[in-house]
Amino acid sequence: MVYSCQFHVVWCPKYRRPVLVDGVDVRLKETLCQTAKELGAEIIELEVMPDHIHLLCEASPRALSRAVDPQFGIHRLVKRLKGRSSRLLRQEFPHLKRCLPGLWTNSYFVATVGGAPLSIVKQYIEQQGR
Image (cartoon, rainbow, N blue to C red; front, side):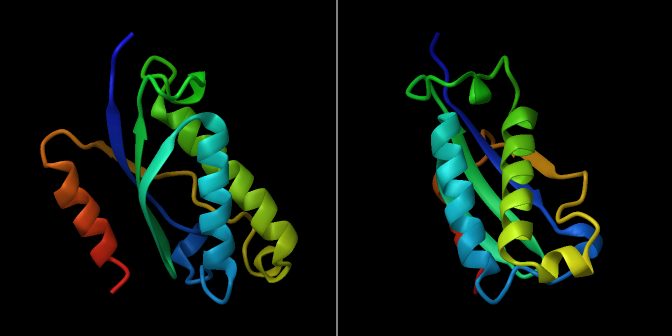
C-alpha cells in the first residue's frame, strides 16, 4: 500500500481555559511526540498555545502502525493523543484536576493538507506561537 496523508489538527482544553502554560506546555509537547512516535505517526510541526494546540502530522508507509493507516482513521490517532496526554498531564500537574473535570473538549478540528503546500501549513502553525 502506498499513501502519504498529512493532517492539520487543532483542539483545546475544556472551556478553552488557558491552562497550557508554566511547564504544562513543555510536558504536553514531549508526551504528544512520544505517543505519536509509538503509534507510527510523524509530527511535522506542533505549537501549543495557552488555550489550544495546532498539530501537523503525517501518516505514511514508513509508519507500520495501524493507528495512522488511512483505513484505520485519523480519529483514532487523535483519540490516543488526547487520551494519553490528558491522563499523564493530570497526574503530573494536580492543579489541572482541580480546575477542569477533564482536560480536553470532546471535539477537535482536522483537515487534510492537500489543497495548500505543506510548507505553507507548517509556516502557519509556526507563526501561531508568536
